[in-house]
Image (cartoon, rainbow, N blue to C red; front, side):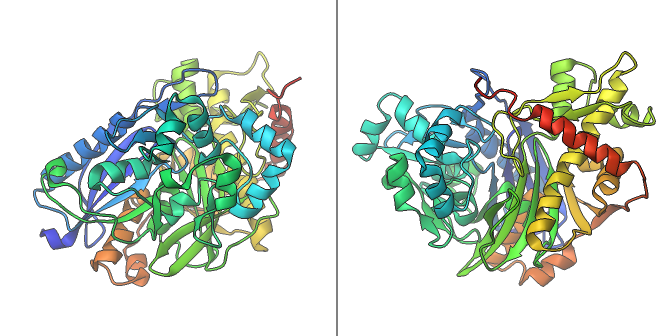
Length: 494
């Protein structure tokens, strides 16, 4: 193995940071990972320590390089997406914790913008629905509530950005982001491929504090040698879900992937033209390389794996995620129990910040096995909601999807997904397609791989699930929709 044959890819996710080294055959030859803590200072607030994110990237990257025993050709980064922070340019000191994509503290700001009519303008300019999920209102909150933030911005001593910008700035000294990440902020105009000045003015966000935007596959700077023991170029940076779409070799318009992590994220390759959605999905940048850009339709689900974590940490009815398969298959059905995992609201296609997690259909006969089965089936039903919206936008049914992420190892969930959604499910051989996708992009940028046809030939399938005929599916889906209606707007002001 030579330095010319490997890419170091770091997936800095919501709950874990993973560093993997891929060789020219797309095999992982070394890896390291660590957990990332979240804090919940108030209801619906979700934060992280920016220093811990940076430390986890450096520590795991160094460990992966040491395990590989050789330098890497290039570095590739995948990031959380909408999570945002501010820091001092002169000292590098974060002025507040990272406000993560799950955080809902800006519900009121969004409601005020919507009532004033500004929400329609923001959506028209950025293509995104007005929602606290995205970075813009979080950044507005930081500027308004962190003492001295606006004064530092006026003096030119404040920087802001999503977590990729923070990491890139610390790794290279450059304040940069890419098209995919910028397209998740609700500040980016995809037609201009730049920050939208009218939206910035409306939200009172100075352009001067924001990073420069560049293609996903391009040169972001050299890593400082002292950090990882070698200097290497950062040749790719993408949002984690877009990186997974690229890693799943979804290079043809209409290809669909689903990634199950903390949430579930369904993306469809929409080709070179900016799509529109009539069914509650989000147009976004899939990736950019040189002057070329590919778009996607995105349907995010806030809570998927996090629902299983809640069963473990909140309710204490399971000890680990692996236990859910045996429990779910120990009963023939959910005994009429339905779980809508809207623990932080509902995203696509509903966009209801006031929805809350809801378990309905409980009787004295309900057991923890029924609740566990209802949780896994709820993830599959929620995925069907998004796939049906996606099919409505692209004009034809979706027949097959590629799946990755930790929950793809759960055979019960994967078969339920196939049955409930009526699709063929192909599970990727590597669950780490986010890291693989950003490695693929960096490898293209530095010439390790020549084109996407080469990359497609490297994609491997681990398992396939075919939909089974089940006459109860449609009735159960109708019951799911009734459960969703009971969850919606539960926390809305009276």
